[in-house]
Image (cartoon, each protein chain N blue to C red):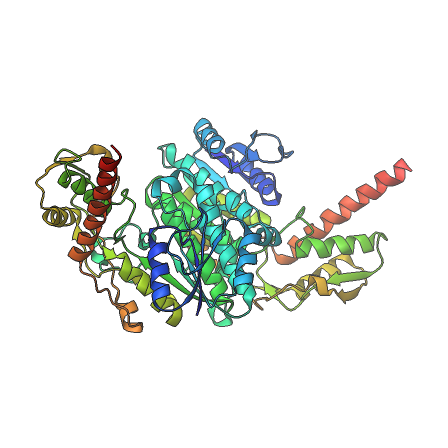
Length: 319
Length: 319
């Protein structure tokens, strides 16, 4: 199976590459920032806003499956630069879909969209199913819904066989510390190693979100891409409050900390509770999430603890 | 009523300006190509891809109603330059909607979308109602659906009171001769005036489309913008074949012509029949189309006949 991963340089991309290699796929990866470090695959630089370069690469690679992960995913950036976000997230997706359609082989294309396309969900609408109304509420989620429309166009034409994945929050070792689990784990590891005073800065702790492990999510991407078409929610099927996430991480770290609410971290209009049904994915494919919430958080914490320990050791050696 | 018309320079814009002035509105118009010739209104140059300029102008004008017509509307252009089309049709709409939302007065905003958002419609789905499935099938119709999503976002936030108009084909004097009625009328007027041999080049004559008069359509824009919210189809409620349109124009012109089918004019995958229900607009507002099909075509033909006659006369005088 020739698998092309577009946008392989990020957190999820690296896990997806590992998953595909483990399955014995012949893997080709693109990034726009130089290539990552796994090895065992062909790697290319690609700017997906370049229509010709994107089409040319796809026609050269002739993949059986394309995993399209490349996107501007940081909500404030999308809010301040919608035009640039549209260029990457929407026109970029169109360039990928068009390249796939030109192959003439009806390849599979998996678009990584987002559960954010559901927008502000009322408590009565939980758990979120794929048929729920779509009410994208910011430029990022708008751009994701627009990318879905693009993929649906080429699928209806019979030019590609598409899957649209709508993942809920996912966590895992190596995630950017702008995201909550990684952020808290990093702060706690710093405290545990004596690198920071035992004060934890937090935002809104009441919100409840559907957290999955990134390793479960990328496994779903492969399972769906090679066997299904249509739209699929990907989540754990339940929600945890940020408070529960924090308490679990504190318990894992074994440190005592003072919790301090930081006004700057209190996000704007929040949906109090958000979780999806993954019935469709689990019924139609063999996929189910397998990694427990606590295990994911242990690994996230361990990642930062080990990284900071290594940095500390090398700093001590250098001095 | 302070009415701001964005994208007033085109065919529809000029008719809308006339309609608003006839209603006694205080009219402010923007174009990106210098301003049109009606007079009686304030006029500004505006490039809606410039977020700051768009916001600044709206905050300066403080309109009660914004009519947003500015768009790339030529299908082949959208197909070849999706990124540029997104910048104008989607980011541009976002800049207008955001400007309106910043006023704090919850102004009315009418977005001129398109019945093309329904895409390939099955015969069993006619007449098209606002609840019909949306299957945009090209970059132009995708961009229009995306603009709708943007407007719906700001409406849901309570920042604007929005109307989304989905007009079907409209015709009228002065329309670009790339459009079918204007094209045939121009060709026939040339024959009638001895400027061309009596051969008419045509494309697919079987397709049936829902043609309205542009003067009916702009009247609907005003009626809906000042009194309604939501999505509205705007059409005649029935379809005519291109053959019927051609036969009517030939009858009006009184000339005898040979019909020649031009392969270059046969558009790609066509929907055989397309017409919308305008029940929602006519039930909720006082609007109904009033100008008969034949009357519209008479005026379209007269426009070209008079224009070519004037050109011929001035050319004769000059020689």
